[in-house]
Image (cartoon, rainbow, N blue to C red):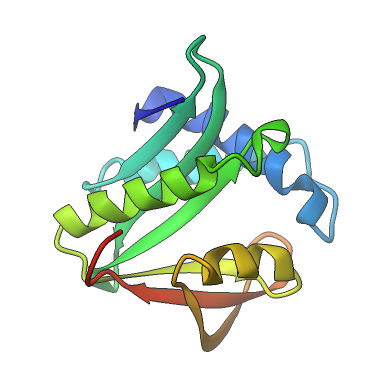
Length: 162
């Protein structure tokens, strides 16, 4: 398994993977144009670097995981993490943790002292995944832009170790 930098040409495939991996967790059905719409939004972020799209690939080049990290527009010392996904048949093999650790390291090198992300409030399993890795709920809730589902804001200081 290797983790490499993705670029703008990889955004659509990363979004498609995220929607596949997220499919079982969603409370509503995915609309066919959702991956392309999300990819368009993310492609715009390339105009405001730094941006870290990381890809986990098998030795044969199959994309099996992705994560996106960028300093938060409201506070560049806080890294915003999203799009963490692992192909369902590749889950529970440490790929998500590897991607998360690597994006945290990249954000730290950008000067971020902490991170934040959103997790669907109803997804206790995913919340546990992040809690085991040092993330905690801030008490903030926001509505997911597409579905309106409530999401928890999770945060973590980047002090010692990824």
